[in-house]
Length: 144
Image (cartoon, rainbow, N blue to C red; front, top):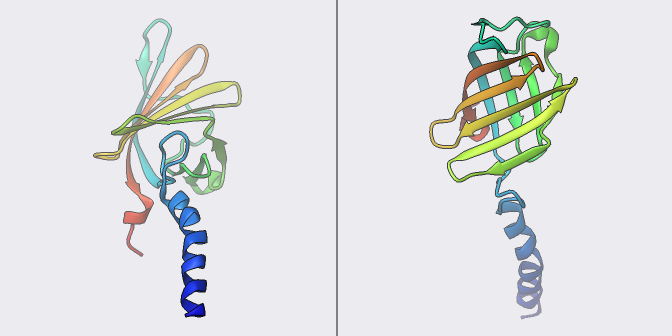
């Protein structure tokens, strides 16, 4: 009987912790992580001259989006693997996650659909803007 009481007490003590781990954070985001393949992009200047992005560095082709750690990590190309940028703002808008941040004097934003996992990323360069489209998969859906 004493063992049962101890087990019940332990369950009552652990229940709030286990429940909190499964609940969304204050922004409604539940800690899901995604791997995204960046597909096509375009860059436009203020005169609406548009064309392929003119990256100063090799453009990323795969990224990891960690909503719990609020971090985006480049997975490819190999020479940029491991570069990170912090997600400063993240909001759950029902069927979409909206994220944004600042890096190297530029702002970026990303909208990720939770239904079809498509994404659009915009980067404000000051004198131009780049838009890149991506397709993502929830990390827990990737089979080993």
